[in-house]
Image 1 (cartoon, helix red, strand yellow):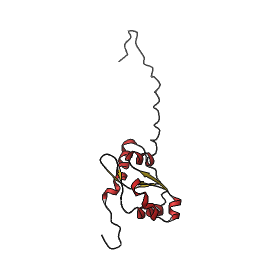
Image 2 (image 1 turned 45 degrees about the vertical axis):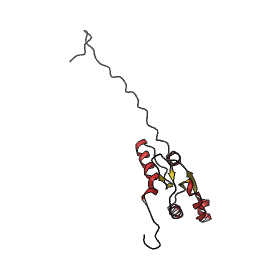
Image 3 (image 1 turned 30 degrees about the vertical axis):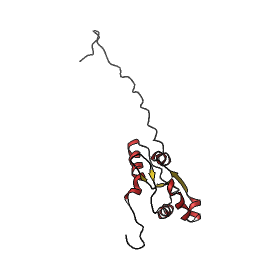
Image 4 (image 1 turned 135 degrees about the vertical axis):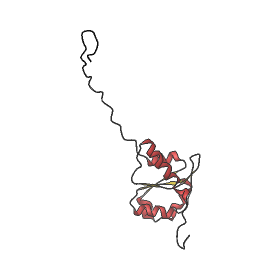
Length: 131
């Protein structure tokens, strides 16, 4: 890691990747002003990650209003400037179900198919359709 850089690792994008996949499979869009981070286990538990201060500050700079974080990272919020804490909403989660509830909008309503008008069919005197 270069001097002064923030170490990054793949697991912190776990909840983001699962949310994207669920959104795609269900047709439920992800809220546009929500950011998230957290490692996820095979059983759906959300685990703490590093770099919370930097991630939240980046989310704030880009205009996000809500950030979903692992509950075990709650103490990291104390490192944030007070104005950032006051301007943003933090959703602290323990499970992927809580992430999906906070991050996904309801599925768009599907148009109900309208039955077509029946088409009259000419029937011959013998009850058979003409050729």
